[in-house]
Image (cartoon, rainbow, N blue to C red; front, top):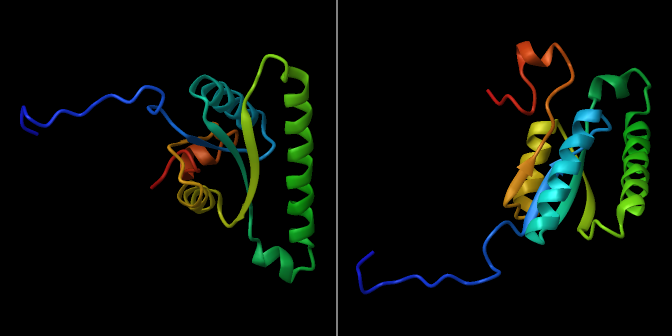
Length: 141
């Protein structure tokens, strides 16, 4: 950039516009959602709450109704989020949407971030001891 080319700061257009947060019903994911919600409120960004429904082909072959079960989880998450927002709506003015994607958590969140044109992605720490060894969404190989 030369001295002749100056970029002008545009007031009100900096900062994230869409913040994606992954939730799975764990306490860690709800803490991440609260953090992302606060960030979205301060930045006046859209909070996109994402649940990634796992695809369990092995469970389906054993007769386990995995799609219905994970669909129920998504519905319960929406109820919990609405209840939490209803409690603080007078002081916590944030725009939010709930989205469900299918697949493994990492690729589901990548797809969500791409499709929703996210500026930031927030996830909670894994609560599984095994994930600390073999990895999780927060530890990408």
